[in-house]
Figure 1 (cartoon, rainbow, N blue to C red):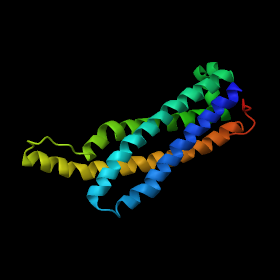
Figure 2: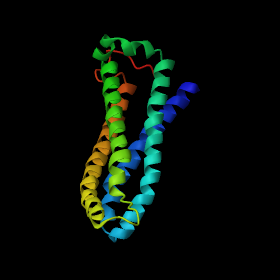
Figure 3: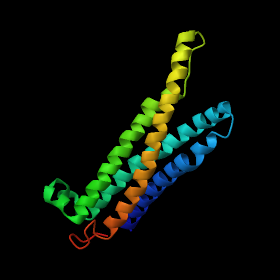
Figure 4: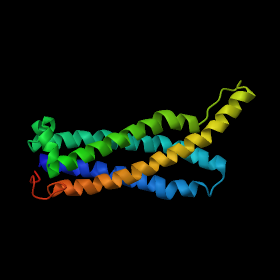
Amino acid sequence: MINSLTIGLHVLCAGIFVGANVFLDFLLTPRLELIPPGQAARLGDRLGVDFARLIWATLIGLPATGLLMLLRFGLWGDLVDYQFYLTGYGSALLFMIVIWLTVTVNGAILTFYLRPRVIVKLPYDATRQEIEDKRNAAPDAAAWMRRLARYNAIAGMVGVMVGGFLRFGGFFEGTLGSPW
């Protein structure tokens, strides 16, 4: 029962991460260009906070459930053995961990560095130069946000595929049986 629940939560987190990123990158973002800039900015601001919370919940849930599965399946000790990563299962797991690390770093950059530069909030007594500087920096930050969001969507889809490999023993079927 616990194994099934943990696996289900892990798959749910992965599905939400991939689905939300695909929706954002391939459906919502291109359509925001069809509405007036003021309304697009307001919608982006409102959705951005909710989206960031959802994505961070999945980015925390994935390693939590993943580590719990490793513990339940008796693979915890194998993580420190370099030969484990030479097996089909170990190499697929390592690939998945690297994907998670990269999308987590991207999420931190998107949330804490780029988003504040796109959502420009100026004090009432801002100078003309401050307004110009912020306005000029926003398009560059938005372009980087689109690039990183596209990477997260694609990396998430690849991560789900690697999860399928893990389910059936890893990259090289038969070198290490799947614990599921």
